[in-house]
Length: 332
Image (cartoon, rainbow, N blue to C red; front, side, top):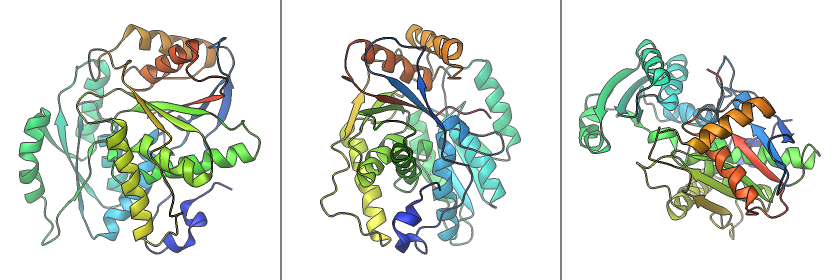
């Protein structure tokens, strides 16, 4: 049975609502062809998580965020992303199914064929789009967007980029519990490290907390792919702390000596020229993953994270491992 926070902490059942949008556990398998040196590599493929053609890390977060919006009596979600935002599209489509309107503030990024196609999908999603262009203009326009989207006396539910709030990070607390169950069931050995892309931070923060709750000694390595947000270990450790505090406030009896930030490492060497800009290393990792492991990556997030895995492993960073690469890309 797929582990669930409500099973681990039954006291949360009435205080922290959850809706099932995807299907887990997502598969794990060894990557035996892509790398021949260093630690053994495995993949946990969250691209297989979502239903209805969706996958990746956005759906796990929305399983907690959408019912929280409804619990608060909100009718509109206001959030932010780049022009090609998968987060914004997922929020608009899943939110619409649950009677929630989505308002998106969109920041410029390099425009390619994918981004143009994504903008067409966003326009068709029913979301209200505001092209704020830059981070500064987005911040300046936030009071206007929030004020115009009140429903009576109820404000909209504001979500940061990627849904990386204390509630959204719970999606990857659950993913860590899921991984721990797969280790216990013998599907893979306990990893020394789990590596994934860091675009907004909620995935890494949730993993760091969830691994500690599950009793695993696994370290989280976050590969930064976004240069527009503070994504250092201190900032993401605070997010993990806020998720732990949220669980306690809603009634969960977490260990008092829990320290979710001690198992996190953030690396920035694979960002390249900036967010959305392809690097040669990522392009190579994307090609190798596809040809050798039938693993589909994309250039903005997951290929950069795989490039980091391969390079760090070649230089002995992970010791004897094993290492899990968390693929957060999913077909849509």
